[in-house]
Length: 333
Figure 1 (cartoon, rainbow, N blue to C red):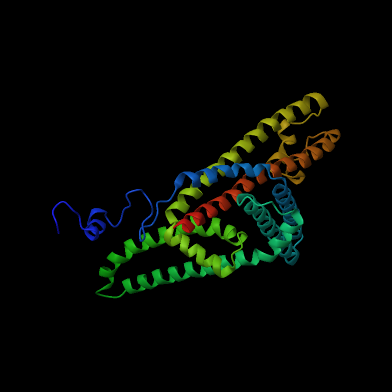
Figure 2: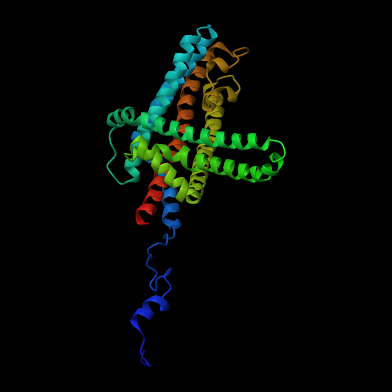
């Protein structure tokens, strides 16, 4: 080697560390940093879901039909018809599940910037892919059951004489860590992201693989983004509740004053809290006020349904945004 010159091989191998790049580009073998700001912006943008009329129509219809089915189930149970009550309760779950999937498909279209499908097409597609969500949840439930079985096996080993108490020293921290990870994975990945993975077009097997991948590689990011989404959804629900309470109180006071309805204002607000006519004590209420109370209960029920749908829309759009943000980071990696 001549003084004053640098060996090219030495410069490549020694002057630049193999785990870094002089201009900040990703290096092979090093996972790129997760870009938090765009992901958080996508989660915050889920508030725009309250403007989606198609998804709102689907959810309102689904919740209304499910409410009628539950009311029928309660009436059947009161008559002692357990078979009818069970069938009507199952019908309510069926309507809510597939209605939510139909709205989720529309939300996925919006999140990906595609033209949203119409209501009929969304319902048909939900009937065709809803079973994938159930199959994925079933497989993930089996995995959780296998983990629980492994922990029970460790506890059984800890009950053996002589070595059991020594083994229990390791079982205690292992149990705490495993149960904690399983709970976080279920709350941050499995529960919120199973639907979006299917709505994005994944089969049941692909959805299971994607969820396990997110649990291994993106559990922290998913937990933070889902926590942020929960905050946004909670604020939306709180805002809707405040508006309903203030507007309902003004409506009730004005009704008593202008219409001359001689009842407690809270009676006219019963529908706003999801109560029906059967929950109102009719004793002491004038007969001429009953038609107004019935109308207020029906109208208040509509407002209650809208207030319930708004945070649901935000949540469905938000889980789609979280899934796409995590998926995009993996595509870049």
